[in-house]
View 1 (cartoon, rainbow, N blue to C red):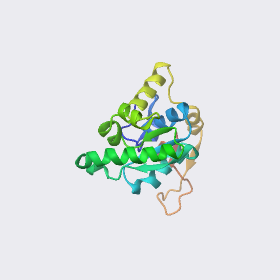
View 2 (cartoon, helix red, strand yellow; view 1 turned 120 degrees about the vertical axis):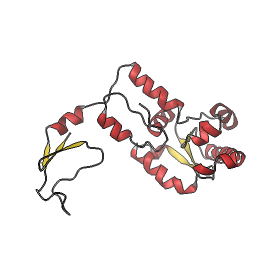
View 3 (cartoon, rainbow, N blue to C red; view 1 turned 45 degrees about the vertical axis):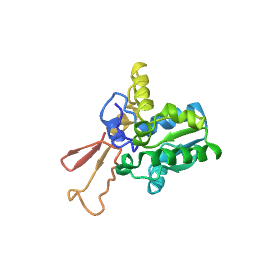
Length: 195
């Protein structure tokens, strides 16, 4: 299963809910980029997305591999109306990243590339590989499924044996148990079980 969009929304929930491979586009693209070269540059839609995108990349442990970020200069709803400017800005910013040492470009936003910019054409313009967020994650998921790999359940089995009991007044302002978004849980009478 591949999430749609490079924010990797729902990937953790999917991994905790099913046994089949669940791949986030950014997760896959960063790993593919790191396999073919290092370091790499990341292209985002708008300057306001740089900090958020950096946090996603940091979560995957790849921040130190990033030369820098470039921006195409338009928010997602405005890309089609400014197609030529988006392409020009993207190429200019990506070339800047290449001169700063990026050996791979990752367009963090599928509407930039491959939707508005053909990745093969972009590679010709830049002279470096471009890892885009539709093809790479689909092929990564196919690879995992093809070799018979599934989501690991080792940690889930440990969690099955742990039980966190909360007060009868839950939810309270300071419950004795803390559950994170990555944990699945089921409500029993007065008890949360970490799965």
